[in-house]
Every structure is written in C-alpha cells, then in structure tokens.
Image (cartoon, rainbow, N blue to C red; front, side, top):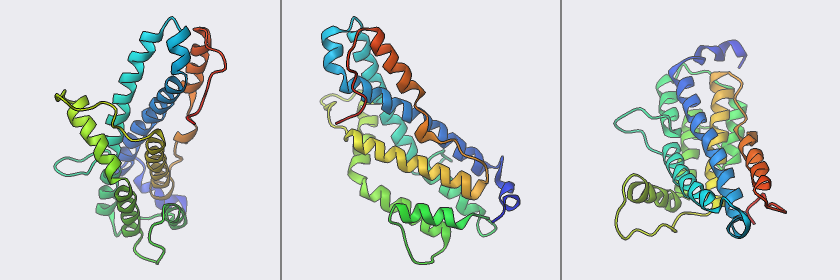
Length: 223
C-alpha cells in the first residue's frame, strides 16, 4: 500500500494507543538495562561501592517497575480501553474492513513468531500470533501478575519475593512488544516508529556512574 492510504490513521486512536504502548516499552527497555547492570555487577557493588545500599534499593524498585510494565503490555482489554497489545489489536479490529495495511511487513512479523502461514485474514493472523505467543508464556505471565497483585500493588503476607521469571524471559517479552509496536506503526499507521530496541542511553550512563564509584571490569550482559 502507498503512504497516502496509510496516513488516515496518523493521529487516530489506534496511533495514540500504539504510542502509549511504545512509551511503556521504552521505560521497560531502560529498566531491564538497569536491572541487568546492577545484577551482574552486584558482587563488586557489595564489596567496593560506597553506594551499595543505594544501588540495592534501586534494584528492588526497578524490579517492581519491570513487573508493572510487563503486566501493562500483556494485559487483556475488558471493561476499559487499555494501551496494551490486546488494546491495540482491538482498536485495529474495530477499524476493519476499511483498514489499509502494508501486508508484507505484517506477514513477516507473523512468520517471525510462528503465526499462521496460510493466507488467512491479516488481523485474524496477527491476533492468532499474539495469542500463541502469550500462551507460550502463560506460566511466566501469571507469575508477573501474581507479583504485581501480591507484592507490588499490595503486600500479602507469606508471598516469596524471588519467584519471578528469568531475565531472558523478560527480554523476550520486551522484544515481542517492541516488534509489535513497530509493525503497527509501519504497516497500519504509516508513521516512522521509534526503534525501541536500540535506545540504550540509560545503560551507557549507568556504566559511567559505576566507574565513578570505583568499579573495574564492568560486566554488561547477563551470562
């Protein structure tokens, strides 16, 4: 489809929902980088850093922020409209059948995540791809929701604080969300998306800060 056909969605509710989704994912990317850097350098921070108590506090708060963000991204839209992936999908489905799209980019996204390969309806295939991905991570998403409800939003007695999914899982959930945002922006809205996966300014700043407090040979990635 050409750019003119897609421009009708710029500034629409679909566009605004997708931008709000991107803002959640933008913060999640930075939170994941902070969580990673503090975590992999924790032993040095505990031994040598004059700010070890500060960094410990930041690590705890960042983990809570990650939990909330992932729950927001993957939350179902029921009583109220949400800026979640499902919220964007619902808005897209309400626009059908007049919706214009760059079908190739959407099909590439569907293929990347193992969605339907048959020439089915584009939005149905996109929804099926999301449903399958969310099903794959059902157990992990349930653990994030439990942490949100019982530890972050409330403080329920006897709930363990070390039962969250792995960092790899957190990143996989981020990348799906970021890729979904980009394909909606590119293929349905027709506006150039922000490349959320490459926005690592906070990580670079934190690396500089860790050097300033005396850390050597800073680790940058989870092993």
